[in-house]
Length: 337
Image 1 (tube, one colour):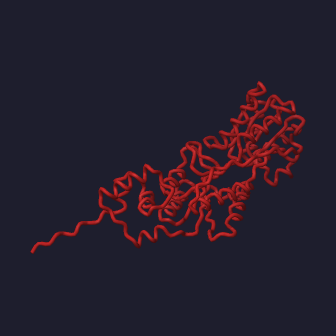
Image 2 (tube, rainbow, N blue to C red):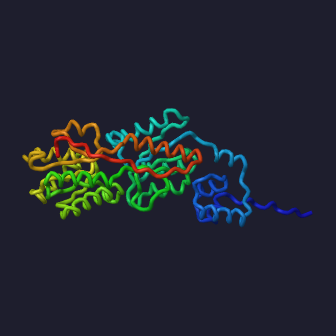
Image 3 (cartoon, rainbow, N blue to C red):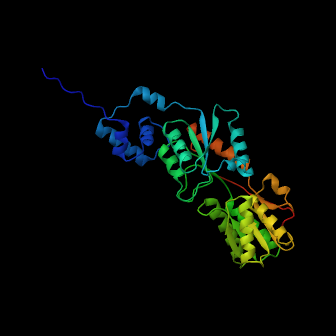
């Protein structure tokens, strides 16, 4: 007697392909997990009905189990970034916020290549409960990896394109504007800027604050150079500015590290700070008080940034929907301007 061949059960991969979403997003919908857009949820539910998919209960239980791991991912490739005073303070803030929880921190450098691949595999296999991406550039692949993973994500700063549901940022626009207004108030009119990396939200926002403060006083940017927020790049940019605009009388640097490099070049060129050239930085890292002369700068609360990112992510994991947060900045006046 002929017997019917058992019908093969559709797989999760087939559901994901049918719905046009990632495997992780499909899994989150099937497991009734939050933080998936309604459009993706509707597409997966249609695919489940069309294919007659029935989830494996054991796999479902494993998929919804928390790992206790929180990822802090920097879209930067050099391990030396972790020694940067700003990022070091962010890590201190994250660690402090996790101190009384059952979660532990995993640091990832999401550099193109192996770094991104390792992070993608970790998130795809549910190796973490949530992620905090930082330092994203324009079309940063880290943003796509985070989106495809479908895990709760709280961004440190905002990406250039799009605004995430949850983020914590500093008032970069207001800080840059305050720094520039301070230089204008000192009577400086030929004000240059050493900005950060192009294609980052922080650089675009600080430049906008700089430019608009000048415009309100009828001034234009005297000259602009870009650097990567490090001291050597600040020195290189300052050298280029002096070559192009030797008559400049003030510099706003988008980080204290770059301002420190600028101070060194100005000193070596025989220009007195602040008499010949006034300098203002951004961050207020510990070394800003010990430069020669001590650096006037914009304080942004790096520890608080890390702490509030973590608190926000923990709230999301607890089922809450917190509001994005912008932390205030303030001017710290020392001797350089």
